[in-house]
Image (cartoon, rainbow, N blue to C red; front, side, top):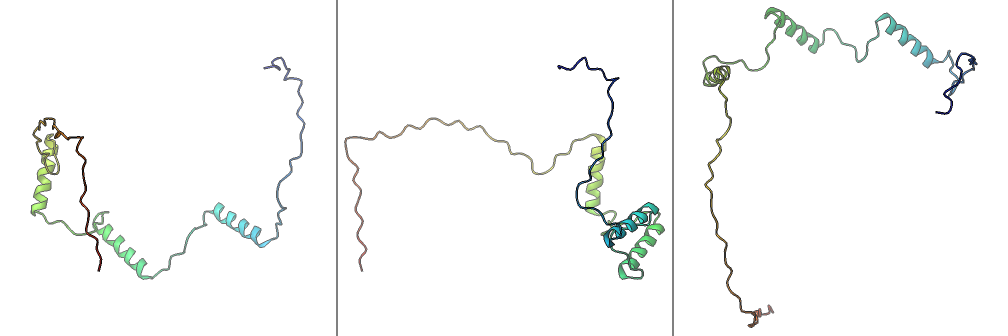
Length: 144
């Protein structure tokens, strides 16, 4: 670096006016008024995005019923087909869980087939006589 010995203490800072790029903003325009209103709502915590909910609609009634079921069940709402205790599948799942808890590794799917080692010998090709030419048979022409 060339300027290692510069004296920073004697440097003076000159304030310059920064130009704002772009078109000037009209504070009385409809867009600026709308943006100011949105900022005020955000500051108050009342600004909501998205479509407003319609009270009394079929979806809102269904959601309220699901919430009531959730509260009645102790905070949990089960969806889908209920399990049948004592079924064959539930017994299989219980056995698998017991094996996993015991530390037994479970292999899934079809077991690998044991491949027998096949020893192949090199094949010796027939001896071809180079002196005799190979003649192709001519095809009969197809005329109607």
